[in-house]
Amino acid sequence: MKLNKLAPLALGGVLIAGTMASAAAAQQPQGAPAQAGAEARRGHGEWRRPDPAAMAARRADHLRAALQLRPEQEAALKAYVGAAQSKPMMPAPGARKKFAEMTTPERLDAQRAMMTKRLAAFDERVAATKRFYAQLSPTQQKAFDTLQQRGGKHGMRDGHGGHGPRR
Image 1 (cartoon, rainbow, N blue to C red):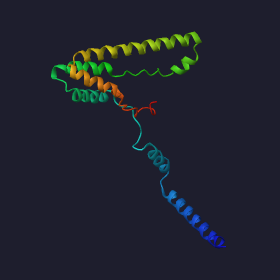
Image 2: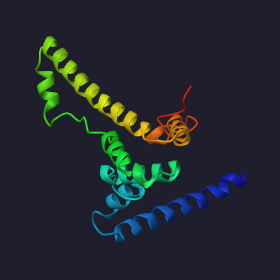
Image 3: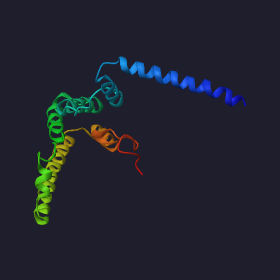
Image 4: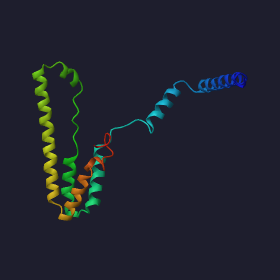
């Protein structure tokens, strides 16, 4: 019986809250709700691709400090960081449409060409890493080995920081 007496009060509270929310929304300028919602979803604003040069500089600074590099090793570090910097392998604009229009043998040849290009880039990074490694003292080599085991330039340590837990 008490519940029946409280129902009109609860309904009135809901109506008042709804009216207040409508009034608040009407006071915002046109387009503001969409922008405010988008900003809230993004957090700190629009995502931008990291600057490769800035990332390479941070990597060099990290290696310089972690390995305690000597001044005569600076040239080897610059060569290593420059070669180890990943080159974008993004397809050219309109490549999907072009790829879809290819026959199966043509697509396979295009895939092989892309794999060959990626393998060549990998080989460049391997050679640069080996040249840099050869310039390091045995103590520095040990430290470099430890850095690479912990995830190298991607920062994945102990299985965290990637696309989910490592199993």
